[in-house]
Each structure stands twice: as C-alpha cells, then as structure tokens.
Image (cartoon, rainbow, N blue to C red; front, side, top):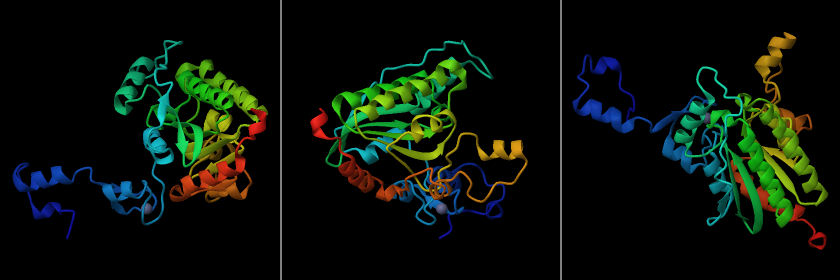
Length: 289
Ligand SMILES: [Zn+2]
C-alpha cells in the first residue's frame, strides 16, 4: 500500500471529495526521523518511548512526558505557580512578555520546567524536568528558582534529586538575573552535597550554555541519552572561532563519555531501571538524618 500520492495521479484535483478527506486524515500521523530519514508512524514512535525503532534516534520528550516516564502514577507537581516577570522590559523582534504568553499557551506550562515529588520504582525522589519547547528550554529566574527549591526540598526531606536537562542555555531576555541562577543553583547543590543526599543529572538533547556550565555537570552521576548534543558553546560557534573542522561526533554523548565528561550513556528504554539501581547504590545514609 502506498501512503503517498504522486501529484500527477490527480492533476488539478479539486481540494474536496475523497482525496482531500484522505489528506486531512493522514496529516500529522507520520514523522520523518532526523537520524535515518525513515518515515515513522507517530503512534509507533510514541509506543516506543519516542525512540526511532530503526536507528534508535532519541526524539525530544516534553517535561510532562518525561515525568510520566520516570515516576509512578500519583506523583505531585510542585511549584507550578511561579511566573516570570519582565525585569528589563525586554524587546527584540517582539516583547518578552508576548514570547512568554505564546510559550505558555503552546505548552500549557508557566515556564520551561516542571518539578515533582513522587516515587521512582521503590524510591522517593524529587524530580525536575526541563521543557525544550518553551523558549528553547532557556533558564530564566523561574527555571532557576524552581530547581533551587527542588534542591532545598531534596536536602530537607533527604530524598535524592534527579534533574532532566534540555536547554539552549541562559535566557538572554532576563539578562543578569538569568545568569545568576547558575550561581544560586550551584550553591544549593553544594549544600545538598554536604548533606550527602544524592543528585543525578540526566542530560538530554540538547543541553548547552549556562545549564551545562552549572547544575547539569554537577551530579554525583552525570548521565546522558544517546546522541545528545552537550556543550557550552555549540560546534558551529567553535568552528567559526578556531577555523578548524571538528571531529565526527564532537560534543555528542558518546564522544563525551569517551573523554570522561559523562558517567554513562543510557538508552531511554533502560533509563528507569538504571536510575532505580543507581538510587539503591546511592541511598543517603539514615544516620545523618
Ligand atoms: Zn531513525
């Protein structure tokens, strides 16, 4: 059966009747894999955790999907009411407030992150997951504050913290108040470390800029999904700066694992089991409570 119709089969066909009906029904049901260029049925992709069944390319997951994947049903979302202000009354091609509003409408989230408490297998955990489709997963004051609160919550409750990073870096529209989130979260993570509560960071495609330069690389375990771009400055910027061709796979998970920047590259199918085992190993000692 052919899923595509050559244009010549129906020259000047009116945009009504059977052919129009067919095109409506099939639109959006298929997606092209950027890894192997296969056309995949979306339902098949979703049933496979949004991993290409042919080449194992890991498609991006939204924050809600990620939390659903990791936590048992019945988890609780927390800090959902934080909202970004516009401290610089910033405008580029359009006002920052308009960008925020549009992103909120499109994603149903207040900002580029969700925070939750719940169970991952048998373990009580605190989880934050970033949302790349919200202004490129950029870290402004709300993302920073949400993560800092999650770190404090993990320390106070002695529950391990898991952060899933997916970010284009700091949110430039918030200027210095976005950059200061790096220091704020890093300070909170140092306190978490002093309290001997484990922190695992999962780096997903892409994790870049100020996020890589702060909390995404500060885990007791820093693990990544296959093929994820993980960097501070991206390969295009580096090539333009040093005027040299970069090696194959530069700044991808597997390359970084080989160079010692990561502890493991974990397939999405194996992720939950991996985290359950890691948390068994890393459980905070009860005597320090
Ligand atoms: Zn593929």
